[in-house]
Image (cartoon, rainbow, N blue to C red; front, side, top):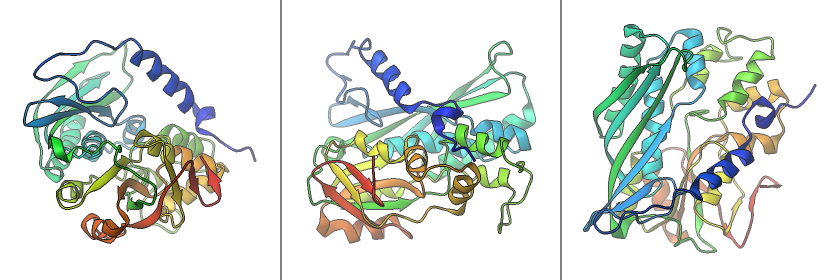
Amino acid sequence: MRRLTYAEAGVDIHLENRSIDAMKAVLTAKRKGFGAPMTEIGHYAGLLDMGSFALAMTTDGVGSKVLIANAISKWDTIGIDCIAMNVNDLYAIGAEPIAFVDYLAVEKVDPERAAQIAVGLARGAEISNMTIVGGETASLPEIIRGFDLAGTAIGIVDKDKVVTGEKIQKGDALVGVPGSGLHSNGYTLARRIIAESKYTYFDQMPNGKNTIGEELLTPTRIYPEIVKLVQECDVHGLAHITGSGLLKLRRISQLGFEITDPLEPQPIFHFLQELGNVDEGEMYRTFNMGMGFAVVVAEDEAQKACRIMGPGAKIIGSIVKEGIKAGGMSF
């Protein structure tokens, strides 16, 4: 049986990074004075100088997870994913979300679908203590097939609480925080695996109560606990683990991350890996593998950080001189 990969399914992470670098080389204009940028393009969120505090901004979408929602006509959780993919990036720089705008592009207007999407958006905003202040719906029959959902979030953070990763040092503890499943990444590969298998989205998960489609639509976890963590601990680094998996740790430090006691992935990951004959390393380069967020703190604050982040959070490793290592694999 051939081994499926993310690139073969249609998403080349390395090519995406080259594309981002090509855009960054051109996007050099910067505001001067009040509202000037405090960070370079490439971190989880951009920061603007507001004098006594910083304004943080992110933008993101749900991705091809929406195709599964369409396939089983279940749209009431997709809005949570849209909120989560944005606010979790705000949390990753230490910011607290305050406002959100959504963008719904459709092939054909469907009021029932829109209402279901709004249910998820409202729930995501409630979890993250944020207001949806507006948005845009566009009918684009010549461009869109089905629909696409994206949004932009803004947050605020005291300048002395900004977390960029620059404080990370060798010997720091790495705390892993559980996710809720695939979240909103790697779905191009996940969908290919199901498409080439004997299963459909309507089949039951082995030894589970949900159908495969329902399991794949489990909404992305939102991490409001980070707000308290930043206030009560000296946080050195925060990483939202999304597409490209453990490689996301490179976004916060060029030091090494040694994972000696990883979080246990949820059953959906094992199911997809076995069904698609996916290499272990490919899984960790594509999916979050059970860890939706990673926190770096001094060793003596690690247990406190675990308590704040809640059930399942634990010390999974430490900061070392170089590399990303987990379970005998290097990334």
